[in-house]
Structure formats: structure tokens, C-alpha cells
Length: 166
Image (cartoon, rainbow, N blue to C red; front, side, top):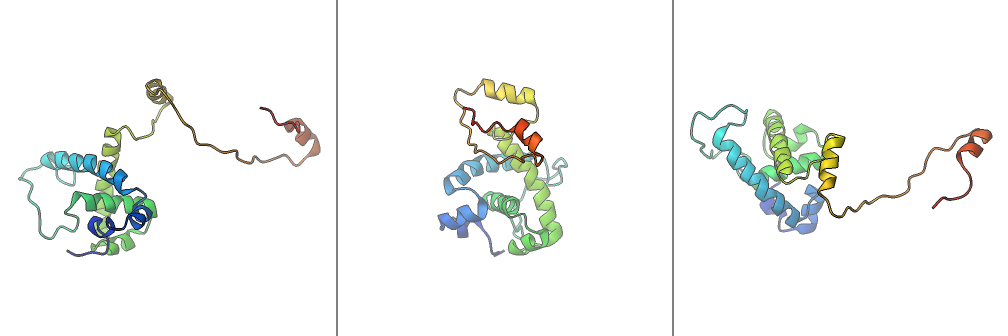
């Protein structure tokens, strides 16, 4: 089925690709290799609903998202643009209920792929300590942020010394 968005259409335009999906083509290819492998392993055992597979996996001709790269594009575009499911479905040539099913399924697979690449934030301080213990160099990208100053003069004096500490 022909739809408005696809990997093949946008991969020929690197700037537009990055704007639409939030990843460079190189970054996409790295993620895509892990994502594709995860999908293959998953579909060998389970169907899309998470039930054990009873029949051999067969590619359907009417499948809207048949290519793994299109599946990754589909979920990245949804996450980046945060569009309504109805409009996202329209862009990919499917109904809203199909879109909902794909979104929920592909979010799980994307998270599993990112975990496999160690690109998921830690969920506890112990996990963070363990991860940071393995890191040799750490670069933080920060900037000073304005803070809310007190309105009362006495409170201002107490909070702000007029000297920048180094």
C-alpha cells in the first residue's frame, strides 16, 4: 500500500529526515539494526498481541507497515510530533484503531531495543550509581537557569549576597 510517509521516501532527503524523525540517517541505521533484530526475534515467538505464536509467520500483502524501517519511522514520528492518532493514521494509510495497536506494540519494541543498547535512563539511584561506576568520562551539558527571587527586601538580602561565588 502506498502511503505519504516512508523510510524510502525520506531517506533521500537527510535534512528533512532529521527534522521529521529526530535522528540523523546514521543514527537511524544504528537503531534500526537493533530494532529490526528485536522485531524478528519477537515475531518468531509471539504475535502482535503478545500471545504465543500458533502458526508460522507469513508476510501479508495488505500489511501497511511491512518494512521494519517503516515501523521504526512510524513510532519515531509519533513520538517526536505527538500527533493525534487519527492524523497519524491518515499519514500512514491506516485506521485510527490500527494506528493505536501499532503505537502500543512498537513503543514496547522500541523500549526493548533501546534497553539492549543501554540507552534507557535508570529508574533508581542504585541503577544510576552502577551505570556511572562503569563510565570513565562524563560530559554534562548545562546552563545557568534563572531562579525566582524573593520580593520582600529582608528575604532578598538573606538569599542574595551580591557576590558571585566561584
